[in-house]
Image (cartoon, rainbow, N blue to C red; front, side):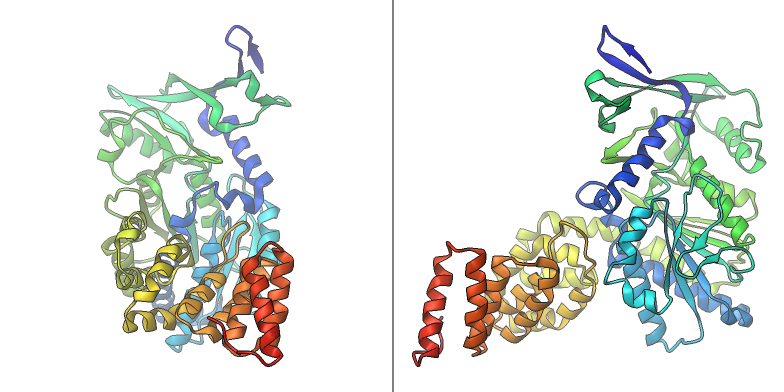
Length: 533
């Protein structure tokens, strides 16, 4: 690295092909260092890690497994493997596996076996999944396994718990892979088309000297990116006709634009094709472009920093690649924000009638993108809505704890004036809300908030039950023990309430209310009044 003393700048690299840029190394180092903490108020992930999108995916996969076993009855003797690329927090994995398992049970389908593979390149995330209490029941039943998988390199994939190396002999049934918010964070190349000529964008990186430590940038957001262009005259730039033909097509069709080419994604897809013996379906939700008009007339690629960094995915190129290798693609029509796409090879979609219908229904007609648009409207204006509207939104969101936690103050403020039907409806669905709880560090506990709900409607038995469940996650929190003691008192268990109030006082010795409650209950136990409002 060469310092520019006049500008107090440090040149990190010059004129690099984008896929070979140091930015990708920094990206990997960030995720490896942060582990699960990367998803705690840093890297955005909710939009592809909620019950609604998991339900959409589960319906598509269920339809596919039914179609495939109907067409190939012997496939019931083999496991369907479903692999999530770049799993990250594991929240989507939990929702998907839980949902698909429930669907199979409710439909009485007991002869289709599946195993969900949570994969990532860093061992830190796998350690977190291995000990996560919510995943344990599925691990014990063999419905989940883990794999250390670096999408940027071609290495053998081994299922950790089964100690089973994936191969075409193991993946007898087609492999289903999910790529949510991952194609945007692995390597790309970058090109420009102008006046019928194709140019490569070469990247140069620099930063302030103050942002350097041990010859490495400290904060990626403070890196400056500059571009140089180099004309490409070789029609076989990649030496792969399936990719080179896309570049040639772009050169002919684009007016004037810059575009990204997802080479990291192509490398991962090639490995998955090899493992599955070219029987592969990929469902991907990410931010990106899906048509030539949307890719044309763009400026140089923008890099979005959020702890790590991400870029727009060229879904059109991925779709063209699958077509070039004899495969299939379904690109959702344009939406603002994320888009969902389905790609496949070795699958005759004309014979997979239920699968095609499910894709049309849950990718095109009402998609995860549409859901998030509507949810965002409610989220940003929840203070304007009555309790029955909020309850309807919770049902629409499949009782998502993330949403409830965001609007719980509004809900609590409305409970005293809520109508009987709405309160009964919400109370009936609190177990669903609890069942969707996937613990992550430094996040609020939905079990405590469910306790608050029941407490507010004076269902003290259920309130106490959820407060007790919350102890594992909340720990020695004054508010928890104070609320538990109140419930015990209202349930006429003053002996237990006294013990719990005393523990609450230890946690907050300045609480006058707690001191007063202790004095009152001691008198009640000695023969005084038994209740106190």
